[in-house]
Amino acid sequence: RTLEEVGSVLEDFRQGKIVGRVVVKSQK
Image (cartoon, rainbow, N blue to C red; front, side, top):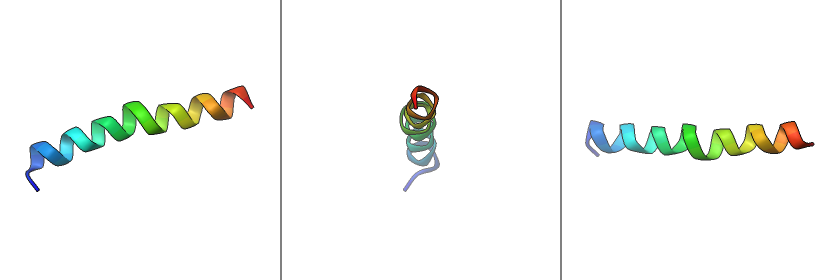
């Protein structure tokens, strides 16, 4: 994969899943 593709995946991971998990933990 290209570095740009990997970067976009990391951004989706950070913004989407990690933030989502933090929100879920804070709600619990």
